Length: 339
Image 1: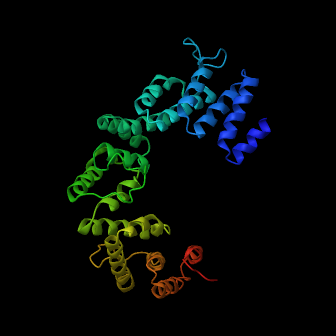
Image 2: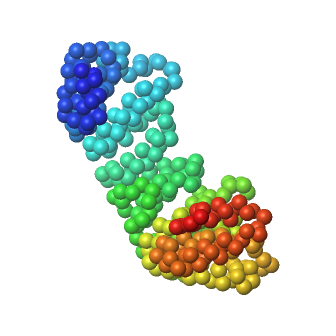
């Protein structure tokens, strides 16, 4: 019967799998895995209430349930995953308040405390009514731990009212629209809030420079994207285009990026500077190479293949650079590259 159950779950015959696991459980009810498999079957067919009752029965069964109150052993992964799975079913069933209470009650038996804090923050925004102030506290603490996690930034913006809590994407900012007032407030947040200040001189928070490109527009966006592109090209980062490619969904921003790129190429060719007014005497010769590599990807994205090939051909002339490997590497990464 176990072989039949395995075949049924592989073929996605969920009703048959659930019934087979029920029969196996009847035959051997003292095996914890049989209880879990039957609960999973009911969960997969959408019978969340039944799945929860099975998990409750398993926890209340002698020898297979929760540990005694005076048991001070560290939590095991089996117990931890059991609690997290039950919380997942509660959330999928729409019982957000119950899920939050369950996580708080059994928090001491869960190993992955980071996940618990992440889930608590999400659930606080799903409650009816939501609790954005509490969610903000959770996301601020999470951002202290990992300021580069876009999911935490999205959650913080939801808790502050900049993004609709019903926005389904956890970390993608595509499709999110901001008013001019919201953009100004968010920019002030990322520039002035102590949360986003480097803790020491070695710490750099890349998300603080990258995320404002999503919610700014006009002259502010031009200034920010110019500075962002200059820094990346000066450091010789070939992944710059894939980094800002999502911005091309906004035609106005794509046009601004193109204008900034053209001006940058013009100045680098004429004076080997990003801008004529730069105090620095000259940039490294590799800056023009990386700028041309970015230009090739930019034009390819816009289906301007003749200009793309021209930029790629010009970048191939930098064989004199000491870092010849970089030029060969970029040549292979260039779109539609040929041997």
